[in-house]
Image (tube, rainbow, N blue to C red; front, side, top):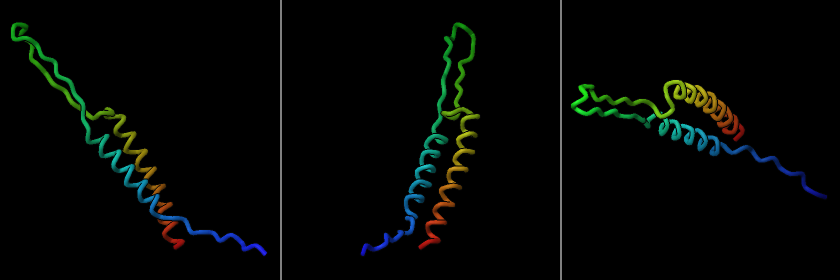
Length: 86
């Protein structure tokens, strides 16, 4: 007679790693900045300027934050569910 396969409880650590990975990617993308400088010659009389901002732009940064909150909340729910089964 064959034994019935035992269901193994879901593991919690892959969800924790996924949350940390999302946080690391967010920190890199939100923490990185890009910019440009426009230098004029002294003879032109114009003022040299520099601008900087987030790599993804303001809209992209807000979109990344919103998507990250949704993804992290989903992963956290799965993490809690897996930990509860243990």
